[in-house]
Image 1 (cartoon, one colour):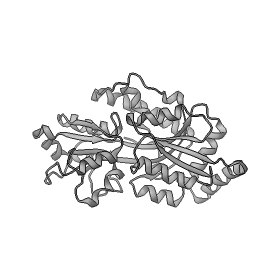
Image 2 (cartoon, one colour):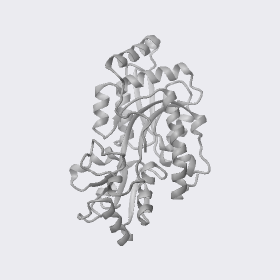
Image 3 (spheres, rainbow, N blue to C red):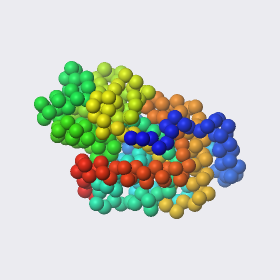
Image 4 (cartoon, helix red, strand yellow):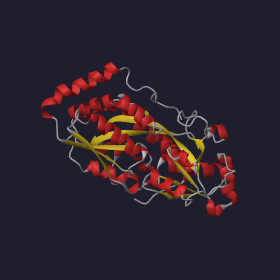
Length: 331
């Protein structure tokens, strides 16, 4: 897919970050709140949780005296969205979510407990990342590419399965597209985040996992995991030796994603601006950039308007893909 945002453009300079930080400090230095909370819909230890904790640490003492992270898992990330929808728009209850929960779910659920365009206020993108497709001990060691895995899965339907962090998520659809392209019925197992799926992969309970590249690379040292392909338009810098799906003849399976931050609906423009400034400053710090890179994430930031446009474009992009796959969920 064409990236509408420059994934390697963070903030233009340390001076810009310092300006943003100073802007926020002048506005509320005398009334710094005690606690701000960032809510994620995925389990501790994964890329979403890591993003929240790195940013929260950088914002502590700048945006609030303490910035904490709360993991509200369940319903493929929907519980976290609902939590923030119901929270007061005071700038102290913040959602961090993969954008697919806002751009894909409206196409697969007949009823959602939230409307992304109505119940949330965009703040900023946090990072961009590609997905990997990995296999573990349940798959013969001779399988070294996606086409080889698909051929094996076709010949061994009892093992033709893969896990993803959530039903209806981007990695779920990537796995489904891989199977559909090759005419293989890959059975999907949904987890509460990629890390639980990776534990089952390591234990041989699921054949493959489709998930954020950083959730997979951290397990390579076990020697039990092999990444067969990545989803980006080009090779991923965190796994440069792994070919893209397109390089392996799967040209229609090219997708990347973003984590982003939102406030509840009706948050005032002043609060949105304050949080955006603090988060853009945090995302430009070396500690956050390096910390996210360790998990295969490229730190970046946007204006609220740019994030709103991104959500709108991705919502339109996923409509025909969901129709092609034919997946619906009860909701």
